[in-house]
Image 1 (cartoon, helix red, strand yellow):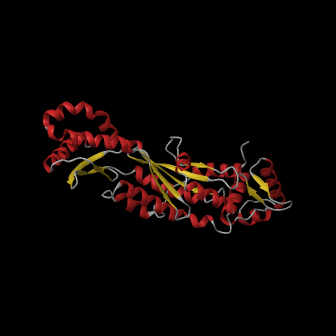
Image 2 (tube, rainbow, N blue to C red):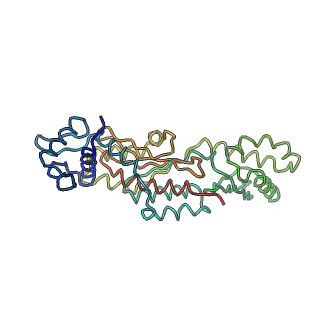
Length: 332
């Protein structure tokens, strides 16, 4: 059933007040906090109706109401339809994103840390879209002990790899020039899929560095199958404050230590928007998550994890800043 405008205002305010102060809302509280022009008795009837519809529940007879999971979900749906990014909230995100001379993992870890500090909740980033990174340059450097350092420059940051292979400085320089010339502007996925088509030309061009390229491709294939998972716990202390239940805190902290469960939690539906999963009951986790895309290609997902009673509005706004700025990022 569609809620009337008045019931929408009452429900949203009830949810916001409970998130802010963990205090059940009463008809008198609604009267004091809103500009709704009606009597306390009418507001009491509206609260009764919202309770009957499953959006609110009463903790004690004649006491105030608190949101149900259904009430939170309604609030979140209304919230996400009007969430706007505020540059003033997370200026440091822009600075971190602009540091494209840093490693990719350092950049995404830094973003997760900033979001966690800004929202006061634990934050997780999962990078699983390496194949979507657009290549800018390669640098191959011979090291001691028969190894090669590979720096792969992408539009987002550098990826570092070490290959267990001996190669001379000349072979490394030749491979650097060849790979940069042939794959600049292409994705890692494209390079993996199409390198075999160039083998003939590569062999004819410079046979000596063929094994360097083959070893690099195998390394990239392995990287592409891996997931980089970074967990930032800066907001964990908030879970233990007096307004949150111990069961909530225990559940969330246990999830942060379970990589498999975190990976499942961060899976997205794929529509490119902020998604919210509201915990069905106390003692379970809610998550606000979003895709991290660069030039329209998904690279990672970021999620903020908390209890059922968490600041969905603040978190959604913070993630909006991150995803909007990353979506605007262009390769040089």
